[in-house]
Image 1 (cartoon, rainbow, N blue to C red):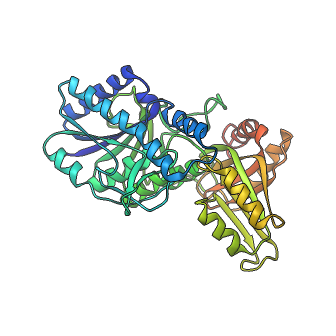
Image 2 (cartoon, one colour; image 1 turned 90 degrees about the vertical axis):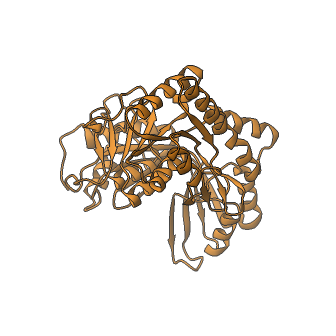
Image 3 (cartoon, rainbow, N blue to C red; image 1 turned 60 degrees about the vertical axis):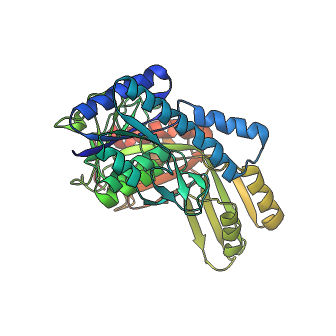
Length: 407
């Protein structure tokens, strides 16, 4: 039988009643003639609660021990869902990330999957069982438990789908797809029916919460279609985009068209005119990765480097600040109080028209950008944190609520 992989987020398995609803949907998928592998996140806010518990014990919790702690959340979900499926007379078995063959590099808290060896999953699917996998976690080549960072259950699901040769990968949550902006911030936002891998990955990198950037990277490499849908929706029909978002390679819109607006509320900007290798060595030693790196006269300390970092996976910020102060105090400063807002679209930077248009829209709302960066698919403005939501509304109005302009 063809294989499908379904992933259910924390809100979908937040309590026992919702777990039972997921179990029923999984059973309907099995009865429709598919072999089913299910990936689950931790229940509700479990991960945040575990993080808060760790910080009560330690202001700068060790990353390895955090992984041991945080990986427990998904294990609870997988076992409960497997039990719920069995109550519906389904034959289910649950596996941790390591039991599923999710092999990662040796980083803790934000590991990357380097290989999937799904032998046990394949064996159980061949026996007709439904396999329930703990998302967000794996095992390093040193046999250490690792976690994949925020949204890592998406990555688990798509990587597993690729390794199993699945027909598709369904990402189910409490929203019915990817929107042009967060509907809680922009009521006028609309659901996007179909998106390219590149647009989706850029939106995820820019802070959109529906899909994980590394997950999209896996999907693109293997040509796996991703269906982002509501858990309460029916199973995919002839036109999956009718009630969700389908991510796949497709004909692109006119160059310069904006697909969506995303934001990240909490970023840090690190500026240093120290010798670059000293700074990068320190950041690597602390396991700190950046979202954007800008350097001039690289290899010297002439003009310096600027690094934009997300606070989301920075669990030992106090220690990082202390190390920077002790090693590079006179040459490095950390700028706080900023957020990032981005517009994403194919060929968005063919000219500078969209940069000018977005900057003008922000100025009209009295928002003064603190920096701007571009890529082939994205323009990002750094703005005061208090202005993030207003900036999202301004950019959505300028690019998606007004008649489109081709640069």
